[in-house]
Length: 353
Ligand SMILES: Nc1ncnc2c1ncn2[C@@H]1O[C@H](COP(=O)(O)OP(=O)(O)OP(=O)(O)O)[C@@H](O)[C@H]1O
Ligand SMILES: [Mg+2]
Image 1 (cartoon, protein in one colour):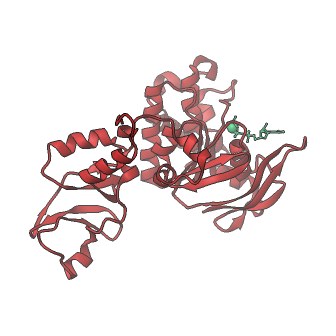
Image 2 (cartoon, protein in one colour):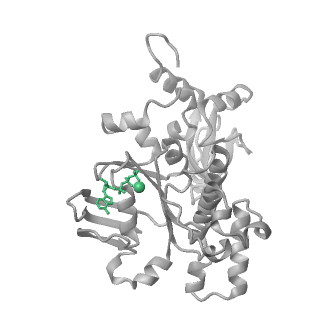
Image 3 (cartoon, helix red, strand yellow):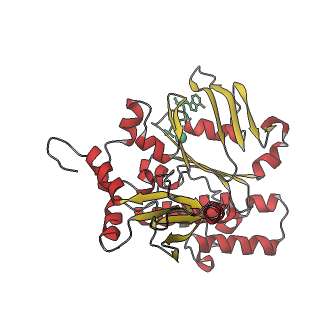
């Protein structure tokens, strides 16, 4: 866990970049930080690996003040993707990727294997790229190297400062998927700065929305969208697209009474005509039951748009749909939920949504 306690940062020229920041990031959680330019995102990130020292306050990692860690060890265990691409120009791509593994005294063989594995992860053929110098790569390719370099030594925490800003939409989406899969598999704690609200909602378990060095709302994407605490939050996430494009995960009913833990359900079976969604003790979806019949059931994924969901609803007999995010059951959705949502988010005067 990373925990900020009353952190302030005043730069030497008097700029107050960060104001009494207190928040916590759970282990294995994906947190996105978003906010207008100059609101203190990079400053916040750089204080975690001590590239910037706070003027006051404390930061803890696993309940230990980061100032009590050996600085090298602290940095080696925190992967960092800088906002500006910062590969070393005189080193090859392979050498750039191997900087931290080399400091950690990995064998040559292990470093080479790791570098190849990571290049493949981001779709760059190792036999072509490993011996090139950064200047022989496009901006987007260099950015991908910046991202995998942060992963090279398998750190527990990864800080990413707008890592995908120089990428075209397709590479960006690919890399977003890679990062998401990676985090799911190896449960890294990731703090990810972005300007892009769609990216923030797609990736973040939680979003930290900042303004003028302060946190305005730190919440799940769903809550930020459904319960913005003020006009600024609304503006920031608003003026997007039609409510039909809202992600299913945003309106999924997290406390749906027909989601049951399998063990509990076996002890107290409910009305047999009622459809029930069963989950295991870890919160993973198992299957559905109706009239004592167990069946797989069609599911919705949380990042599907409402429009896509209605396409599925149209061709299905099911009334109640499990909503899945990273294999976990996060809630349930019915046709009615969608109608109510669209009704509440349409322009009343024209009826258009
Ligand atoms: N070394 C510095 N000396 C003085 N002021 C600084 C310094 N670095 C940043 N600042 C100021 O601190 C504030 C926060 O900067 P920071 O880089 O953290 O913003 P940011 O949210 O990352 O912005 P962006 O989205 O543009 O990257 C800004 O007003 C910036 O001008
Ligand atoms: Mg920045």
